[in-house]
Length: 218
Image (tube, rainbow, N blue to C red):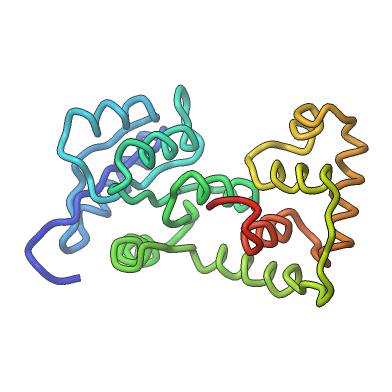
């Protein structure tokens, strides 16, 4: 990136050594400046409210007091101009989906190389999105396996539609069962029926189907 204007970054992670190291690393990148560090979502809120607004926040998913999910939701609602790059050690598809739905522009793993972090920051700022190479490969693989949509129109009953919408949330299958007032076994039946009808093999396949057909908003 070129130009004299610094890209302002906030770093949020509950591990002090890692947070400090990330801040120093980002501060060494040309045209980047770290404006605050925070150990949890509460501190992120306080620092964003009191300090100069960052252009981007590197946001750990798992933090005490107020976690990355609630923090991302708050930032997206109150300061939509701030871009969020989620940071985590986990590759679980439900975590990735949840963070992206809450407003994160990208998702990078904690074991990423420094060059990849720089690439991720640049990409979020320039292209408005970034997924680490590993996560991208996983998602693309899921697309190839899961989104083989049947040619004939698929008819879903009301319960299947309701389940599909809940499946696009951060809730576990057990939580969905409670929300629908049915047993976990019944929820398993809904899931398996949709896997069969929609020709998908995972929850991310269900989510992508729902998004493509306008059944949920991103």
